[in-house]
Length: 153
Image (cartoon, rainbow, N blue to C red):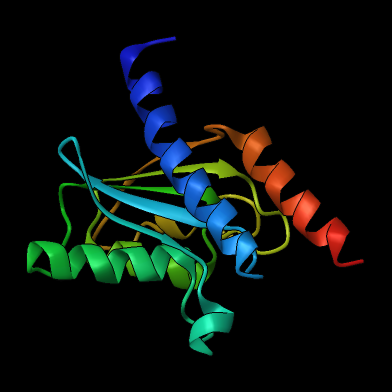
């Protein structure tokens, strides 16, 4: 394993901690971390139920927090770590924020907009493209979701 993989796994573990915390609040267990340089500038888990807000996905909450933390809605040096493949809304927000990299865990075959259902980041007419790394701690991310939904059945 190379050094970047170790770094990506470390930050993904922080996102997984946020996902576990979200599950503890009864939210779908998705977590996100926004990293600039070597510093986590924002951490978030899903808050759709708590905030009564359909846009309060972990990625959106983390992007908002990161933008406030750096004082700019553009995050060109940021890497976003998220436990599951982002949906179309979250992928679009990352494009609007001009992030540099997206690192995610498990694919979302029912709504992923990076490669499973859509390929938002690959559209040739977009004015911004981010590097995408998939599958980092994918099994841990997927297991959290499986356990969460199995407990509700």
